[in-house]
Structures are given as structure tokens and as C-alpha cells.
Length: 317
Ligand SMILES: NC(=O)c1ccc[n+]([C@@H]2O[C@H](COP(=O)([O-])OP(=O)(O)OC[C@H]3O[C@@H](n4cnc5c(N)ncnc54)[C@H](OP(=O)(O)O)[C@@H]3O)[C@@H](O)[C@H]2O)c1
Image (cartoon, rainbow, N blue to C red; front, side, top):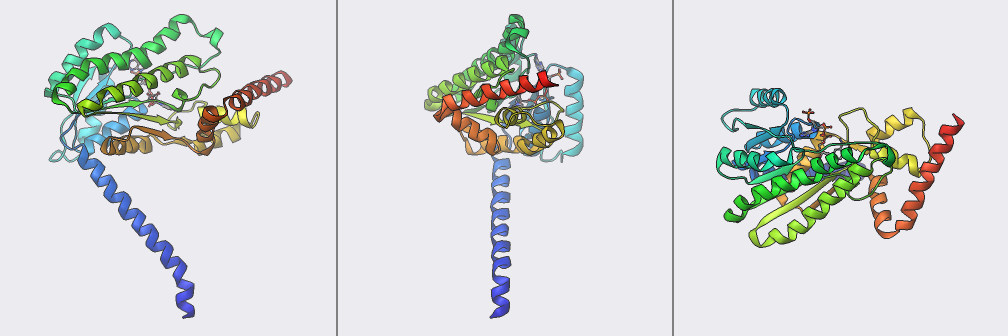
């Protein structure tokens, strides 16, 4: 009786972990099978997240059309994919040159994309440009370029591919957005504005496409941990907790960021479940989104005090 009492808790925990593991494995296999043979277009497939999405969808047996603006990088990605995957259960990807800011060419590129397989099942709008700086230090020209890359580019491509999906009454459109499409963070005005615009467009599109059985999903990660840059979570933490030393800041990057593999797997799950919106954020950025929604004045006050505190520290240094 005594031994049973001692073993009961570990056995229970072991059993629960096993069930969770089996559940996640089954979910993962179902997600993979949901994209098998599907024609999946990924814009900026050569970016950090784009590469991971390419790998995950390629391994899932999708027929990939990989878009990017540098041919050599597309070819390198192609080689990397076909060298590691089992060719009997995967398709060799098609490659298409696409500069998402070149709005006038996008319709022609969309025709090329559709011609690859005659249809598009899933369009993943991943391409994007980032910029950081005070509003008055960013030129209007750059503001417009960011809008082209993050808003006009993705919507032009989507509009060009939609007729094919509508005619077949099936399709999925995924927008890789950002938590900055939900909250505005200082020194990222152009990026945040373009991401807000994109989410507004795709939210409206979702409702309009329902009658055609076309689903629209937005995936909003916080910081993707593949480059050494200051991230939103760190900025938020800085504003919330005043200034922090750089070593703490680096720890926060790790603590609040998500790995591109995690995001890519979430994109696959989102496609499989046709989930409409995903926010990939740890507690502080997630709380910030809720505070912005329900207590906007508090949010603005916290952000403003963060800036004042930062300026004070900079002056003292
Ligand atoms: N990184 C993050 O922390 C983060 C957080 C939230 C959301 N996201 C979103 O995740 C997606 C992927 O971002 P990422 O961080 O993986 O990108 P990334 O690795 O920083 O790569 C940036 C990419 O942008 C491409 N690019 C720049 N200008 C372009 C243009 N005019 N046309 C086509 N491509 C262009 C670059 O291509 P070249 O190499 O050819 O120059 C490069 O592949 C984006 O939608 C981004 O907004 C990222």
C-alpha cells in the first residue's frame, strides 16, 4: 500500500505525459497529411522563417512553389530540401523569382506561379521588410517601400491568385504577420503600420471568402530567434520595467522569442486546422496585447514612461 502511494504521483505524471505526447504526435501526423500533394506557395522562402516553412511543408509531401528575390539563395534552398528528404514521398520544389516590393510585376509572377501546377491550394504570405527608427528619421520613401513590401505586395499577390481559388471553391491563405500588427511599439512605426494594415485587409477577406470555402489565417509571432537584433519582447520589457542591462536583454530575447522551427510547425498546424488567428507570444507580450485592447490608456502610459525612462538613462550615461 505504501509503495503504491509513493509511486502513484510519478505514475500519474508519466501517464499524463505519455497521453500528451501521443496526442501531439497524432496531431502532428494529421497536420502533415493535410498538406500532402497540396500546391503550397511560400513567398520569401529564403528568409529564416521561410526556409523552415519550406522544410516542414516539403517533408509533409506538399508540392512547393518557392518564391524569393535571389535566385542563388533559392537554388541553395532547393538543394538543401531535396538532399535531406525522401524523394519517394516528396516533390521537387518549383522556384520563382519574386521581389514583393515590385508591385507592377506581381500579377505576371502570379500567372507563373499558377502555371507551375495549374492551381494553388495554399498561399503563405511570408515576405516582409523590417525597419527600425524614430518616425522623423525614416524617409517617406522608405515608409512607402515598407507599405509595398508588407501590405501592397501581399495583397496584390493574393488578389491575383484568388480567382483560381474561387473558381475551384477551395484554398487557404496564410498571412505571416506579427504581434506588431496588434500593438504599436515606438521606433517601429512604419513596420507596425504596414502589419496593422495587412491584418485589417485579411480580416475583411476572411469574411468575404467564407462562401467560397477559402480560409484565411493570420499567424502573429513575437520575436523569431534567428538573428541578433533587439526584439519587440525586449522593447516591451524595457518599457514595462524601465531600462535593463544588455546581458539581461539578451536573456529576454531568448526567453521571449520563438524558434523559427516552432513558428513553421505552428503554420503547418494552422493550415491543417484552418485556425483563423494565432498569436505566438509569451506572457508579457501577450498581456500587452490584452492591455492595449481593454485598457488602452494604461498601455500608452506604460509605453510613454518607458521612453522617458530610456531617455533619462541615456542622458545620465
Ligand atoms: N524576425 C522576427 O522577429 C519576426 C517577428 C514577427 C514576425 N515576423 C515575420 O516573419 C516573416 C519572416 O521574417 P524573417 O524574420 O524570417 O525574415 P528574415 O530572416 O529577416 O529575412 C528577411 C528577408 O526579407 C527578404 N526581402 C527583403 N526585401 C525583400 C523584397 N523586396 N522582396 C522579397 N524579399 C525581400 C530578404 O531577402 P534577401 O536575402 O534576398 O535580401 C530576406 O530573405 C515576416 O513576415 C516577418 O514580418 C518576423
